[in-house]
Image 1 (cartoon, rainbow, N blue to C red):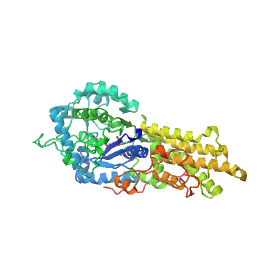
Image 2: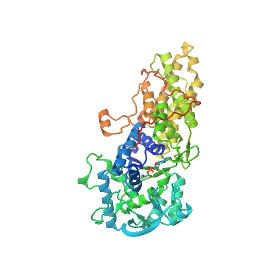
Image 3: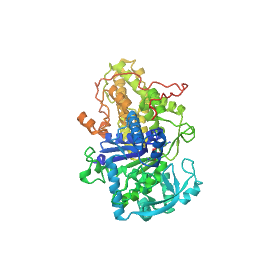
Image 4: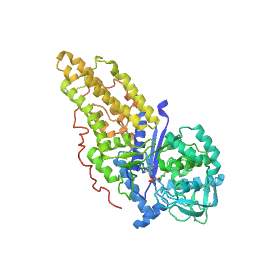
Length: 557
Ligand code: ME8
C-alpha cells in the first residue's frame, strides 16, 4: 500500500548552552506538523528531536554559571522538553547525547571506522570557528575575512587528532549528488553544497584533546584517554543511535521502540541553513563508510529574523520562550503554530517576524477565516435545523462548487505538499476549502432562501455541503492546529484526529483512527449528526493593541 512506507523525520539536536527560542521551536514545529500528517495518512511514523549536550561551548557556559556541564545539560534539556510539550509536539523520542545508549553506539561507530581505515590519527592546523565548533577551510576563512559565524575572530588551531578521511569520498559524493537530485532541498541550498564540494574535500577531525566534556574515545583505541569525540561527529550519529542501529543486540535499550530500526533511512532531516554542510556532506560520507543507507532528504530552511535584523542576544531582539508563551497565552498555541508553519522561512529566504504581520495573518486566516466560517455554518444549522446536520438533496450544485471534486483536490494537494515538505502549500489546501465555504455562502445566500419555507430543502443542501467541507478542512488542518481543529470537529459531532504520539497513548485509545484518505471521502458526515455552536474559536485581534508582553515564566538557570 502506498501509504505504509515508513516516515522518519528528525530535527537538529539543540545545544544545551542555550534555552529554546523561536528558531529551535520552529524546526521542531515543522517536523511535528509533517509527522502528524503522515501518521494521520496511515504511514508508520517516527519523529525524533533532542539535545546536543557535549562540546567546549557547553563546558564553557557551564563553567561561567558555576555548574557542571551535566547539570547545565539536565536543566536545559528539561527546558527544551517543556517547550516542545507546551507547543503540542508529538515527538516519538527525545534523544540526549549524554544517554548511555547513544554514547556506547558512538564508540562502536568509531571502532568500526578505525577498523575500516576511514578514521586515522594525524596532525592538523587550520582556522577554527570556536562558536560553531568547526574548522573552516583556508578559502572560507579568507572569504569570511577571518571572522567566525558570530563575528568573533577565527582562531588558528593545531591539533593531533583522529581524522575522518572525508577526502576519499569526493568522487562517491559527487556521484551521489548526481543521482539524488532531491537529497538537499530547497534547490538553492543544493547548489551551494555542490559549489563547495567542487572546491575539494579535506579530512575532518573526529576527536578533540583540549577539553574533556565529550564522549571519550574507546579505551581500546586511545589508551591515553586524551581524545574525546568531536561534538559534531557525536551529534550527527544521534539520528541512527536513537533507532539503536549501532547497538549490539544484547545492549539494546529495552525501553526503545523495538521496530525503530525499520525507520532508517530518514525521509527528512529538517535543519537550518547554517548546519547544512555537516548534514549534506559529512553525514552521508560517514554513513557510506559504515555501509549504511543514506537519508532521502536534508531539508535546510532559512532563518527567522526580526525587523530585518538577525536575532541575537547582544541585540536583545531574540524571540525567546517567554515571548512565545505570551503569544500563545493571548492568541492560543494553535495560532502560534499556524503563524510559524505558514509564514516561516521554509524556503531559501529569511522570514521577518513582526507583530503586525502576526495579527494580520491571525485575523485573515483564523478569526475571519476558518473560525468565522465554522461559526456561521454552526449558527445556521442551529437556527434552521435545530442543531442537527440537514440532508443534502443534491440541490444547488453550482458547477464551480463541485464539492466532491474540491474535496479530492484538497486531499491530493495536501498530500503532495506534505510529501515534498512544502508545509505552507499543503496547509493552504485545507484553508482553501474553508474559503470556498465563504464563497459558497455568498453565492447561495442560504439565510435569504430560509425566508421562504418551500426552499428549506435547498438550505439544507447548502448547509450540509458547508458542514462537510469544514469537516474536511479541519481534518486537513489538524496537523497544524491540533486543538482548535479537534474543537471544530467536535462541534460537528466528529472525533478528533488522533496524534498517535506515543505507544501507550495509542494503546489506551484502543483503536487506530481511519487514514486520511478515508476520512476525507466526501459524504462521510451523517445527516442527523448533532452539532454544537460553542464559544468563538479565534476571537478577533485588535491590530492597535500592543504586542503581548512576556512575563517571565521560565526561571533563570
Ligand atoms: O547547531 N530561525 O544546535 P543549535 C530558524 N547542535 N531556525 C533557527 C534559528 C532562526 N533564527 N536559529 C536556530 C546546533 N534555528 C547543533 C545541531 S544536529 C546533528 C546538531 C534552528 O542549538 C535551526 O534548525 O545551534 C538550526 O539549524 C538549529 O536551530 C541550530 O540549533
